[in-house]
Each structure stands twice: as structure tokens, then as C-alpha cells.
Length: 148
Image 1 (tube, rainbow, N blue to C red):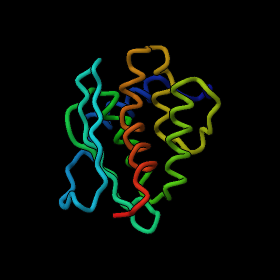
Image 2 (cartoon, one colour; image 1 turned 180 degrees about the vertical axis):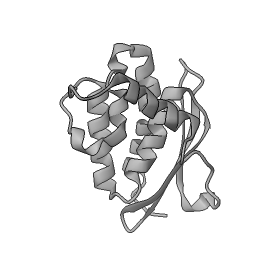
Image 3 (tube, rainbow, N blue to C red; image 1 turned 60 degrees about the horizontal axis):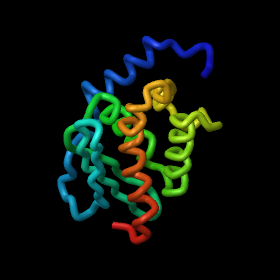
């Protein structure tokens, strides 16, 4: 972890995305989106993840449902990062984020504010919360070759 990362700033990033998520919403026209439900037996998390892809570019990413602070914030940040990316770029971002969560080498340049979850490994019970959204997006990107 870079020395310049302030724990207070990391908490502020998480709380801002939890309190004011930009992408927590149902799509107006759900049939234009891929959708998957993701939940956790160990937390209150029960999210619907939505992804709209056109010409191999993610044009929108949303989520809706009930989730804890970690799930909500990480999914909201992922939405920010994935919009305007190709499927391949999005999968790379997800892979790098999950590498960080599981303490593997990762490319810090592409994960942006997801760096706020760098210490998640210290609380094993929060790993599922931190990866719920990324697993949902990964599932949608890998399982839906046809675009909507």
C-alpha cells in the first residue's frame, strides 16, 4: 500500500459511496440490460446487478437492492469504473480489484477509488461483501456474449 494513503480518506470514500451511491437505481427499461441477483448468507446483501453493453462497450452499470456499507460502496465505485470500458477492460479491472482483496499482485493504476478496500483482507468476513458486486459484474460479462 502506498505510504500516501490516509485511512481517514479511505473511510470517507467508502462512506460517500454508501451514503450517496450514484448508480443505485433500477433501469428504466430493464430488457436492455443483463441482470443477475447476488446475495450473501453472511450479511444482509441482496443486490440486483445491471449491465448494458453496446458494441462491446459498457454504456451503463447499475445496482439495486439492500446491502451493507462495503457491498454498496464497492459496487457503486465499480459502476463508475466500468462505464465506457470494453468487456475486456472491465474484466481486467475486476481481476485487479479481486487480486488486491485477496492480497495478490495487482495493477493499482486501474482500480481508482477501489483502493479504499485495500485492508478488507484483515476482516475475512467482509471479503464476500467487498466482492459481491465484482462477482456479479464478472458473471454478467463472462456469461453474456450476445449484446443487448
